[in-house]
Image (cartoon, rainbow, N blue to C red; front, side, top):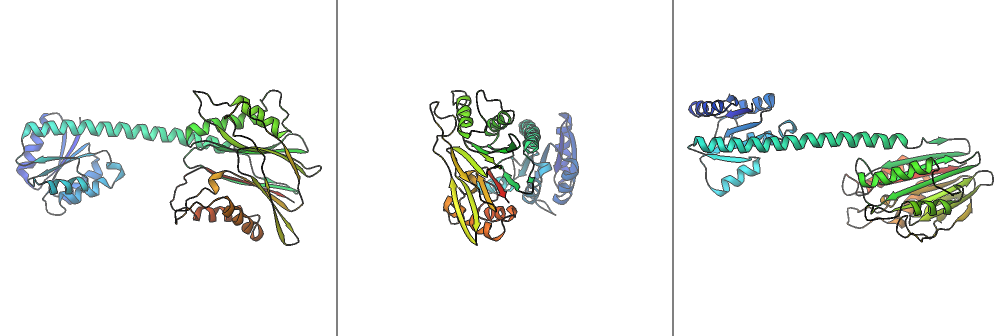
Length: 378
């Protein structure tokens, strides 16, 4: 049984509509003006509303606007009853939120047909809304799982690691991790799967779980180029899997303060040091195609020394491929300049850097996933 609300200041029209709709098996409520009708609509959340256009205390257009502005009434189908037949009037009604029109004098067969059609559309909208809420709940659970497997920040006497992770949607294709391979060697990596959303998040999670379990065959996890080669053999693009990803992978040996690293199409990591008040910069990147593009791709290792009081920043390209309010892309060079300014001013406050990055966006949402890790070597 459908719940229908009739809003009309003419008692004879009220009686006519109630008899016809009750005879068809619907539960009908009546309101005598727009203000009363809006109040009843909020209380009842009816499936369908039949509302007269010309009424005292709020006309039909105002009722339409108020009803369509409320989320709890978003699926309610609204029929506007009018004697105004011009195209301009119908445009005004549609713009106000009316879903259909019924012309005076009311013909009962037409009324019944429009109500049946309206209720079908209401049910369809309601079902879609329920499915959307279910999907959003499942995505929220998945996002909670992704957050649960992120590593904890590190606060040791000689090593501090912090990070920020902002997917462009509930789920994103960025992933990162760090863990000790043994008492002296720390593995650090950040990857960025092509695309956004669930289809990018699943490969990212697969890589994280595979590396964390050290499940690649015949791979020395202390050798970054071997790890990238193993990933490339495992995650080749196929007709059923069109996702590739970039990655930066490094191993820090704290015994000799050496960092060995390799990258596959990923932005350079940036190593900053403060030597007697002067900021020195090193960009750590090697040649290599993104993982999955070419089966024959080869990867190489580079090594650098880590000075005390240095900071290493590893990030995805979403942190600098930002369209600013002037329409220009912020870019890597500008981001590294911002990074150096931040490092000199407050190197242990990653939140301040991220606030400046977010302020660059011309819109409230992110166009791409955004991740950054900061490793301080004390």
